[in-house]
Structure formats: structure tokens, C-alpha cells
Amino acid sequence: MDFRRIVLVFFLSTTLLFTSPVTSNDDAKVALALYYESLCPYSANFIVNYLAKIFDNSIIDIVDLDLIPYGNARLKANGTITCQHGPYECLLNTIEACAITTWPDLTEHFKFIFCVENLVVKHKYKEWESCFQETGLNSEAVSVCYYSGYGKELELKYAAQTDALEPPHKYVPWVVVNGQPLYEDYENFEVYLCNAYEGNSPPKACQGLTGLATKKKEASPAHHVSLVDELFGSNEVNKAEA
Image (cartoon, rainbow, N blue to C red; front, side, top):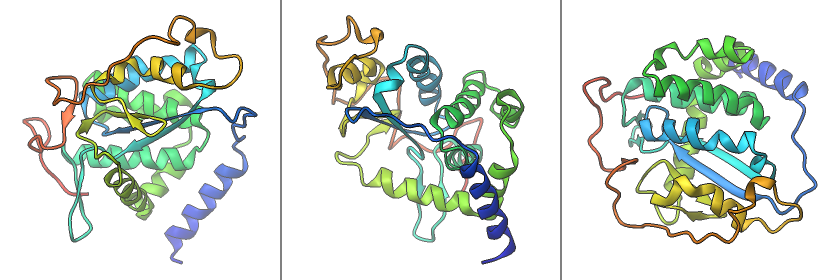
């Protein structure tokens, strides 16, 4: 084990030691998975303007949320990762993966990811390091994770998780509730969560949502998503490898 890996293990172990785990006696939590990429404007919009609401209205109490920052990236035969929106997306995907591992408490890593994605919405994503100060979270463990190469290992794990999706994802954001993709209806994810919840005392926010009809649209969407087969790169960010 080289020195950088020893330092990484030390920081992660320290973080886990002093992080209070989130526990729940409710075995009926609904599984919610978000497959996304950091610089996709539709993924950022969903995180900032939709997903964040469940932390305020208590629906998060009935949810087991899993964030997978990989999206439409591609893994080459030589082990390198090519990101749809360029080098900064590869960087931020890995930073967010490191944040999830560094701060396993959902409320901790989500507030950091929310901050970064809010900067994406504002077209200020290159100021992402300001999110450490804004959230009060220590940057050191995330930096060690990224520069040690452990962040790359996390991205390879997310690549395998994304590629194993059945049915395969067609675009991002790709929202999955209890193993079932919501397709274009992902913005109505709260309705699916409340309908899927089988426990006692659902959140008040579910009142009026439970029982509402939903319709998953499987056809190719016209907007609000970044398609898997869209050309990589743009005028702002170019194709790059991580």
C-alpha cells in the first residue's frame, strides 16, 4: 500500500468514525436511484429544483436515495473514461463520487452535491471548490480521494452499476423507483414514491399524491434530458478522458 493510499484510508476512516449514521426503524423505505452526470443541465435542474424538495417536505424519511454520478460517460477498453460534457464533467463526476464516499451521511453529501449542481445551473461550475466553505465540509478527504486515484475506482464502480441497468438507460437524468425507471415522467417522482410506500404514517406531503395516476413515457424524449447517443462535447466543453 503506497503512502497516498495510507493517507486516504486514514482520512476515510476518521470521517466514518465521527459521522453519525442515519438509522431508521422503517423497513418499508422506497428505493430511489438517480443516474446522472454533473454537467448535464437537466440533471442539475432536477437535483436543484426537484430532488432537493424532498429534504424539506420530509418525503426523504421514506426514501432510500442512491446517487450515481456517471450518466452517459463511456468506458474505453484501455480503462479511461470519456465524459459527454468534457473534462470538467469527468472531474466533477469524480469529485461528487468522492463526496458520497467521504460523507456517507446522505444529508452531508447531498448538500455538497446540491451546491455544486446549483453552480452548474448558474453556469458557474468552475467555482465548485467554494462549496466546501459554503457547506462547512472539510475538503481534505475529498482531495485525497481524487488525487490518490481512489475516485477513479469509484467511477469505475458507477460505470458498472450504470451499464448493468435493465432496461438500459436511454438518457439522463434517469430516475428509478423500486427498480422501475420513470422515463420522461421523472419530474413526478414524488407521486411514484408516495404510491410505492407501504409503511405506516406517510409524510404529510404525500397527501394528495397517493393514488394519483402516473404515465411512464418510454418514447424518445424531445427535451429535458441528455440522450445517450448525443454527440459528446460542445462549444463550451470538449471531449476528454479522465
